[in-house]
Amino acid sequence: MVQLRDAVHIHVPPERVWAWLNELPRHYRDWHPAHINCRYVRGNSLTAGAVLQVDEQLHGQPHSLRLRADVAVPARLLRYSGRGFRGAFILEPVDTGTRFTAELELGTRVPLVGPLLDRVLRRVLAGRLSALQAHMREESQNLRALLERQWRCRPNADD
Image 1 (cartoon, one colour):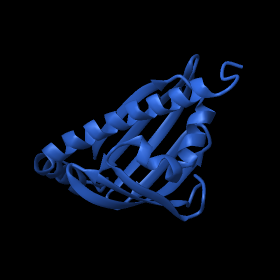
Image 2 (spheres, helix red, strand yellow; image 1 turned 180 degrees about the horizontal axis):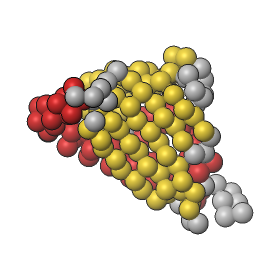
Image 3 (spheres, rainbow, N blue to C red; image 1 turned 120 degrees about the horizontal axis):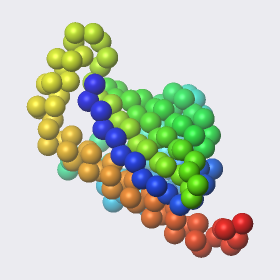
Image 4 (cartoon, helix red, strand yellow; image 1 turned 60 degrees about the horizontal axis):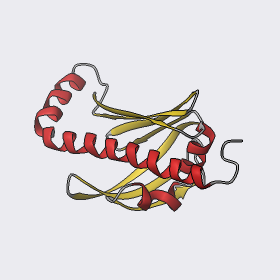
């Protein structure tokens, strides 16, 4: 498996991060300049079985992806999958907010074939993987800025 990961400390509670993610269609375009559209095609909140359709620019190319929520533990974990990839958003409570970790796995876990495919993916997609890692980093930083700005503007945010 080719694995990408990014983590950031967000100075808001995990429940607030989850609430924002749960309303992703409303916030998607604000999250990253490459994000075009997001909508629920099954369900209307982050629960196991919900499906989101997302459209975005990745490595300069338009992509339309269906993301299925496989595991959803409010304010803690969202595991999702699409064609040829799996990902997760992990929310860990810390003293001053949330440690938000985004993970992405590309490839297959099939014995023998998986490691060979991983080597091919790393060589063929080297530039794209680098761009995808940068995109993930930008998403994490943007999410932190958006949520912390909203939290500061909220009345009684420190209560």
